[in-house]
Image: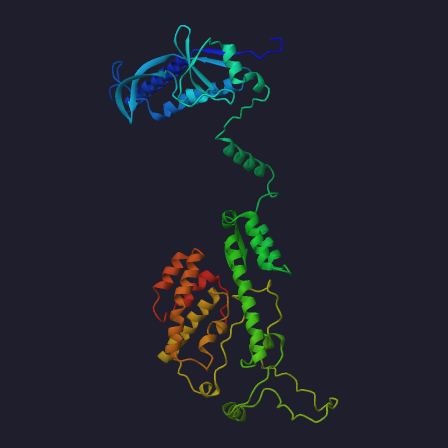
Amino acid sequence: MNGKPNMIVVDNMTVLWDMLSDEQALFARRRAERKAQENRRRAPSLDDPVVIDSDLWNRAKDRWGEILWMLRRHHGPTLLLARQEIVTAFENDKPTRDKTRKIKAERNLAAAVDAIVELHAFGEAHLTGVRTLHWDVKPGESVPFADFSIDTLLRRLGFEEAATARQVTEAQPEAYLQEQDQQRAQQQRRPGENELTGPKAAALIKKALEDPTDPEMALQGIREEWGIRTLKQIPTESRLGKMSADDLITRSLAYIKAQAEKRQQGVGDQQQGDLPGAGQGEATGATPPTVVEPAQAREHSETPPESPAPAPPAPEPEPPTEAAVPPPPDPHAEEPPPAETPEDTSAAEEPQDIPARPAARRAQTKKPNDPTEIARQALLDEADVQARLKFTTRRDHLQPIFTEGEPGLAQLRDFVQAQRAEVIALLEENDQTVLADVYRRAPMPDLGLARKFAPYFDGAPTGQ
């Protein structure tokens, strides 16, 4: 009134807490009677004790907290009255012979107020707790308060100066859940705007692969923007089959890495010239320099050449004539594959070739039912499966053992067996635990391994 703040006086807090406690006791008795009726047992009488469960005490504390919050929102002073009781003092959780005073209310009430004044007798006041910078009172110390009055207490606390700047913030534990519900409702009202779908994820990944500067950084940016947990829940369809958007990004990153290593290896082979028909020379149609050895000379003498022999170097270049025009291409020869971009083909669809075998072994006749050849073909099929899972070609996968010609059966078996642990780890990283266990228990060699992996590759053609 008259521009002055009003004071709220609650008399008393002890009765209020007793009322909330009695209310929970009634709830507990009704709960016990209902359970007894459901279990067809005798209901507890008025003399039987009933245990108040912890959820009921939490309910009473919540209602108590709502009352204190309403009092904190008041811009004026608030005076709370409560009774005290004389109880036994405890030391180290053990009772002693001493007695102490205790506020008869909810046990956290003393920490919720700014000052505690105990009235031991008429006109005998003691300040036992205070929260202010205007009054030097040590924690736990009881200071006699002479000439106690409410006006004196408020002025000593500095209420007159802090009344205009006093602020109270409510703690809302359910605020985060409410924010999530609002975001979910907003996304449902505007579908497609902030929602990631399978086609949208596939388009984003394709756009990242087409990035001319750094496709790997673009793919990582998709993960940072949408999060791995969200991408794992988005199904996509591509040439590699049906998988989550996160798995598609993982395979795309592995494909980019394999292509970079392949290009780097091709440049090195083209510079050294010791791997004929490999690297960028084969991709661009250029013919790398070759060295004719005696074994290859005998082969050329026995089989007709596919291209005319090079003429000896002339001392001076002459203009080409009609006789120097190369012959027409052989109609029975295989046509080179059309040029494809990395976005149009996957690592599993690229042609896979093993290095050319020497002429001496190529001329040997092989029996169709030879157990050695059957085992070799099974090992090559397993090497093909390993190469596809590692996003490379079978030729590049077997390159370490093809440096000195075609390896023997034992060498091929040892190499393929040594690669099994890495392939099993790749399957487990892609959540293919069942297929990894099947591969772990596969014999050496396994004639049906390619058939077991066919569903995983979704019918993708295997390179030879």
